[in-house]
Amino acid sequence: MRRGVQLVLLAAGAALLVGLVRAIGVDVLHDQLRGFGPAFVGVVALELVLDACNARGWQRTLAPSTVGFWRLFWVRQAGTAVNQLTPTASLGGEAVKAMLLTARVGADDALASIVAAKLSFAMAQAALVLLGLTTVLTRLHGSPVLRAGLLLVSAATCAGIAGFFVLQRRGLVATLTGWLWRLGMWRATLEGWRVRGTHLDARLTALHRQRPGAFLASVAWHFAAQLVGTLQLFYLLRWLGAPADLTTSLAIEAFSLVIDSALFFVPGRIGVQEGGRILVFTALGLSAATGLAVALVTRLNQLTAAAIGLAAFGYFSLTSVPATGSISET
Image (cartoon, rainbow, N blue to C red):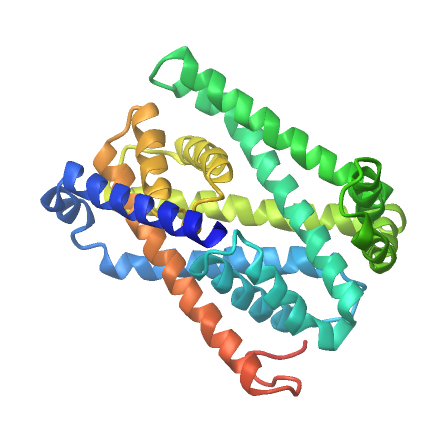
C-alpha cells in the first residue's frame, strides 16, 4: 500500500514537472539557461562548501576526536545520496549513515549523533526561515491567504522542532513509548523498544545537558550552511540576470524551505520542488521562467551531489578498513 502511494505521488510529480516545462516553454527555458554551463561549476563548488559546514555540524554532536572530519563528510554525502535517490522519506540515508559510522563509534553513539544532528539542522533551517520571514512578508504579491498560509506552516514547523528538542532533553524513546503505552498501542513490543532506547536517551540527554556548547556549535555550523545556500542562490540568480540582491535571495531561500518542508512526503520532491520555486518567484514579483530555471539547475546540482555521494558509498562498500587519501581520518 505504501509503495503504491509513493508510486502515485512520483507519477503525479513527474506529470506536474512535464506540465510546468510545457507551460513555460522549452525555448524560454533555453534562453534563460543559455551560456550557463561553465557557471554550474561554481554552483557545485558552493554545494560542497555547504556540505562541509553540515558535516562539521554533525561532527559537533559526537564526542571530540571520535571520528575525523573527512570521514564524516563522505559518510554524510553517501547518506544524502540515498535520501535523494530513493523513496524513503529521508530515512534510508540515515540508516546508511548509521551503518557506515557504527564501526567507528558504536551503534548507540552513531544513532544518537544522527538524531541530534537532525535536530540541530532543523533548528538552523528554522532560524533562517524566521530571519527571512519579515523580508518575505513585505514582498509577497498575492492574497492575504498566501501570507497566512506561510505564517501557519512556519509556526507549525517551529513548534514541531521545539517539541523535538524538549523530547530529546527529557528522553525521546522513553517519552514516546510511554505515550504509546498509555494509549494501549503495541504493548507487546514497547518494552523491547524502551530497553533498547535507554542508551540512546542517555546519550542525547548527556549531549544537551553536559555539552550544550557543542550542540549550539552544531546549530551554528548548520546555520552557516544555510547562509552558504543563500549565497549559492544569489550567485545563480546573478548568472541568470535576474534582478535580485542578497535580501531577495534570503527571502526566496526562506520561502522555499517552508514549501519543501511541507512537501517532504513526495519522493524526491519531483515536480513539487519545481512548482514551489515558481510559486515563490511569482509571489515575490519575479519571473516564473526564472523560477523554473533555478529549480532545474538546483535539481541538476542535487543529482551531481548524489553522484558524488554514491561514489563515496561505493568506496565504503568496497573496503572495511580505514580510508586513506581524500576519504580519511584527520
